[in-house]
Length: 164
Image (cartoon, rainbow, N blue to C red; front, top):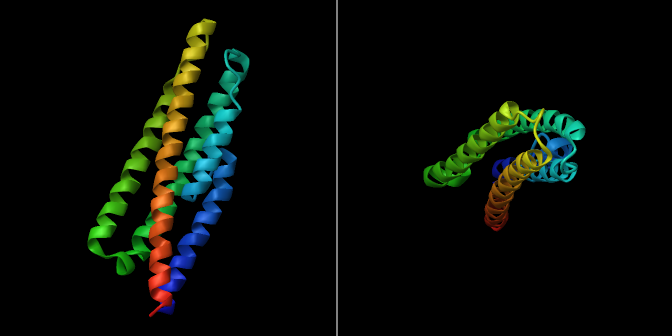
């Protein structure tokens, strides 16, 4: 029982670390950290200012790279430590969600890296900014939903283990 509780505590500690890291971009990354960082980065955008947009695009790219690295490490940890607690079926579902989140992060990185913002008219620039903000919002929601499901699962596991 104690080893399983230690695993749950370790995963939660990872979530706390990720939260702090995601604060930087949506930052490193526990699920909730990534979410906070993404939301913070989105709020920094100032519509229609090409001089600011290029810098924000660079910052967003760096944040997404950090998010990618942090989530990759975090998901690998979960996928190595949780199978004995969750079993094969739950782990397949969890791994599938991890894969979907990483696909969304990779897509966002690609969009940000290839977005051409220089020379755009103000209306075009506003449209691109809106697209990037929507992408961040969608990614944030994906991570938030996953984090909530995972935390509920960890809480149920912990309760069951403590009652043994």
